[in-house]
Amino acid sequence: MSRKPWTDHENDLIVADYFAMLEKEVAGRDCNKTEHRRALMPLLQNRSESAIEFKHQNISAALRDLGEDRIRGYRPARNYQEALIDSVARWLDGHPEWIAGHPARRPPSRPPVPSELPVGVSPVLSNRPPPVNLERMIRTAAKFDVAGRDERNRVLGEAGERRALEHERAALNRVGRSDLARMVRWVSREDGDGAGYDISSFDAEGRSRLIEVKTTNGWERTPFFISRNEIAMSREHPSEWRLFRLWNFSREAKAFEIRPPLEAHVSLTCTTFRADFTEARDCHADGRV
Image (cartoon, rainbow, N blue to C red; front, side, top):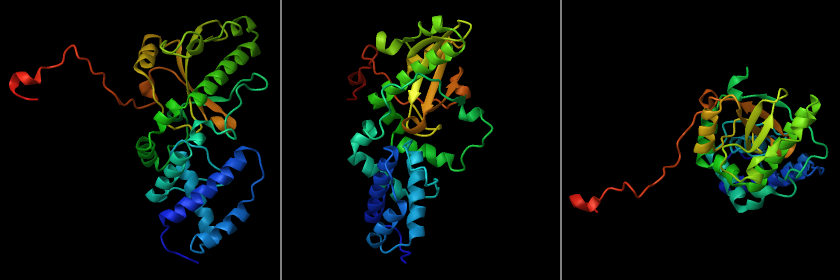
């Protein structure tokens, strides 16, 4: 069996095969992983089944770091090649329909029965230690603009907001506050973006909840974008404003809430600057162009 380093061609082959299996899994179709491994062997310098299976685990780790869905039977194995994640990124770049919301993995537009979601706590407030390779995960997410990808995915964002809306109404109905449930509003849809939150809701006592929804198909530590206006709203209304983070959305949606101050949960990084012409300096005055 070959022990040579994996080539880009081999990585591309096994990544394509991985996504073929993943698409079957998320669509609820049968997938024989053994058959897939054995079919790959002659194409991959006759590598062993165990080597191919471990590579599948590497791909799961790469997809987790990219905030993407993965095959549940292949537990992420870290210390993968940089070339492997480049191959995964190439596959995703060549299949924009996957990111945009492939029919096989697109969540239903509305759950059959409005129900509450399992809501946990922010990862930094849980008792679990951070992943050993967290720094690499952060670098990978930044390199491939994972947060920007989720932000631009309108199908995902709208589906997440709708799911959060149903959650709020179901939670209020459960505690006998159907009067308040009827008053829950999808602000970003009814009034447009710009309020600094997406959903106007209430707690059981009738106190206001201003909910900003952030959705990803990735894992709980997938980064996200947050606007200046949303940060301002969180600071102006700390007792009402909540960030509702939905993750693992395409498979079995889970959630956690973040209460202000945001800095207690996440590291905020400035990524853009506004350019105003009103105070532009005249560079010609001192001879510079």
